[in-house]
Length: 112
Image 1 (cartoon, helix red, strand yellow):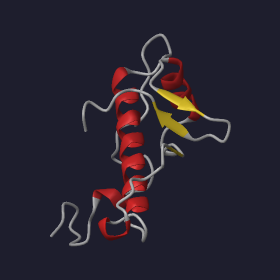
Image 2: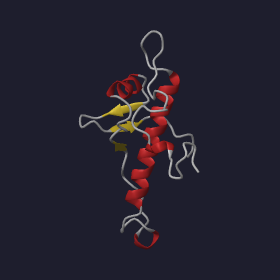
Image 3: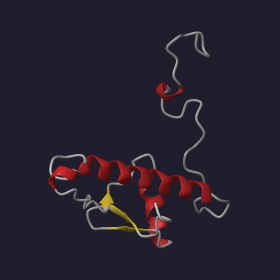
Image 4: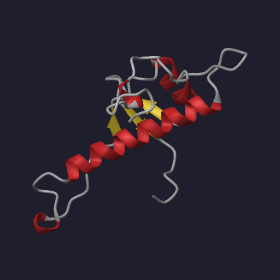
């Protein structure tokens, strides 16, 4: 049995805001916390990685047909973070937002 008496309970199935800490947190001066910006960057990197893997798995990119790498360099940012978070990361020089709202990561990946 699950935590709440139901064998099918899953914390991810909770309504928005229920039993979940606020994803966007602010400092006393109104800026975003370091942790919020770090989580947003992690979410953006994960989304970019998934889009690249999806693109590379399509016919025409495998080893038998040339093994090309994905040309995807920017993605739409995750919607769980407000636009202001992405603008703050752009102001810090961590990402670039193009005129279509796509985000490109500017920092080095650390060799990954």
